[in-house]
Length: 243
Image (cartoon, rainbow, N blue to C red; front, side, top):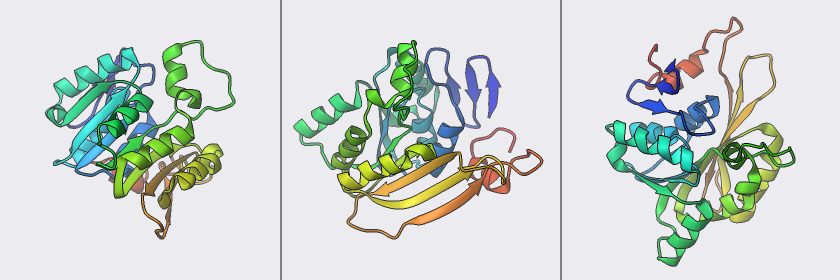
């Protein structure tokens, strides 16, 4: 991955991000590599479209629906999908997840996805940013946890998976809403930046099933000297230019 002004270059696609409020970052890299996809995948709040493109690369047969409400993010996602050889397998819809869920259920398209992926807004109690786009992307008021979990559950097939990246401080609340919706925890990736630091990010993979045996994974992104860890190099080797 290489950074140019307004762009991120991966091995097989480039992300334009001159308009979207939220840029490509570590959360999207982790979720794009650790999430579980399927033949039919829904990307909720696609932003620049990076998760859709990463999943399209990892799952060559996948058809992906990317939902985004923000006008500026749609500009970037549209350009990124059009410029990618994988873009023909991605359908971009300019709408909210709430409206998309209602329309899908009303038209009999419930329980039709194999996977749902989302880098959800999670700031709950903090002051909202004056930038409307960043507020929508960052604050759970735009997509409450119970609405996200409930909608994902209704759109997934039995046995389907729901993957998210969240900070540790919202784990209890988010996991609780997922369990109330009917999900069981399948995988929990606890990710540190450096070995001596506290867990900074979590990637959860929830399964639409009555019960599964959960697996926890302790992961570190960097070695003590600041170089990329073997684990991080392995998960990113198909995406980073300098791997």
